[in-house]
Amino acid sequence: MEKVCVLGAGSTKYGKLEDSITDITLQASVDAIESAGIESKDIKAGYISNVFGVADKQVHLGPVVMSNLGISDRPSLSIESACGSGSVSFREAYANVAAGFYDVALVAGVEKVTHTGTEWTTTYFSYCSDFFYEGQSGVSFPGLFASMARAYMNEFKATEEDFAQVAVKNHDNGLLNPKAHLRKKITVDDVMSSAVVASPLKLYDCCPFSDGASSVILCNEKFAKDHGANYIEVMGSGRGGSSAALQGREHLTTIPSTKIAAEAAFKMAGITPKDIDFAEVHDCFTIAEIVDIEDLGFFEKGKGVEAVREGQTKLNGQISINSSGGLKSKGHPIGATGVGQIVEVFDQLTGKAGERTVKNAKIGLTQNFGATGASCAVHIFQSV
Amino acid sequence: MTEKKNFIEHAKDGKILSHKCINCGYLSLATVYFCKKCGKRGFDDFVLDGQGKVGTYTIMTVPPTGFEKYTPYAWVIINLDNSDLRISGFLPNIQKSGDLPIGAAVKVVGFDDRGIVLKKL
Image 1 (tube, rainbow over the protein chains, first blue to last red):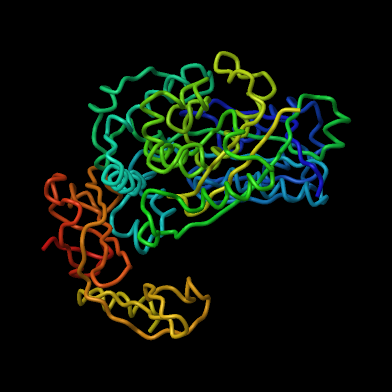
Image 2 (image 1 turned 180 degrees about the vertical axis):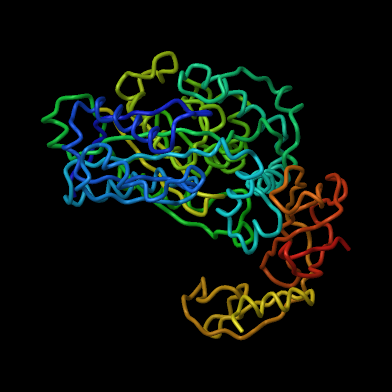
């Protein structure tokens, strides 16, 4: 297998965007190409992730993106894996570059849904669940994670105020990220007094619906060395699955696909969770971040909540979690999120993270899942 | 009849249709085609009383389309009695968390356009 590198990265601002789904994908991709110091004709294949292209009247995005980059003759793959689409897209590009099929590949993720309104998004997003058992019986994604939150509170004596701490921390980080959707300092009281969406989760426990696009350029090591730009190496890549419906899981306070993906990625990288300096994890809801940092092995099961309470996951704490602001504050354009996490790792490891820089960071991890973690991908990167 | 249709017919009668693996005895919901434990295909029908205890739940206040008229309502995962299986569903007329403590007895009472419908006992 070829060693695979990330040579460039670009992102639009996340939030409510005016431009079309195609235009924002192109903006992020052009930024990634320029950041890599290459030309579009260097790209041999494209991997484009998106979930609800129907909302902005464009599906089969791959060829549309490639055509507008002036490389219409190159193959592309349009990928949907719910909120985990971006990391799956990255994984497919990684596998193909590692296998030697292509020396350079483009990964782009995008979502454009805010113009549809909360009812449309709540309803359509529920189609990402195991609909027969979940969406059909009136549960939304906030409701599914609320069910996990209640199970966690019951098993580990965590409180709603504990969950609120995750939101407060991620908003603090997002304030330092010019591209974040919700750049606003909040307090535990703000979270506790926000409207209940699905008890015990309140509005400020939930990430926003966002528009946005993120892109990265992958290449083999020889190409990276020849091009001289700052690049980072992929150390490990893992994917995993879980029962699509929560009812099919042995434990309701863990996400099996995260554990499976993490184990594979750590094994490939030849390191352990203790070696990770910072991580971008899938905090679609505050409870999710607590479950994630336990499933990834950073903290024991049931101890993640204590780590949050003690501030261990703050920027430049024991392990910086979601320096970008995470899904909670940076925003969650679902098809782009997994790619956006890798953009953050690239920026951190190439000295472009500005005020939110994780000090002396050498190794970063990304974890991005689809639905309630029915699918998950974990990637580990190191600076060169 | 597909297994899913058969499952729905049983749920309408308040029962949960499960499958017992002929090879290893592992119990799955009837909508699964291969045994999760041993990988074999070949099951005996095993009908469970759709009764159990609340494992976890949420009370929905921002509903998806079609559920506005029921709001607030609960969505519940129950641990079925006499098995390791769980089932989730819609439970109307729940206003606050005190109405539905974890461990409370609940049963399946039907299946309609709200999926599996539950009732607190």
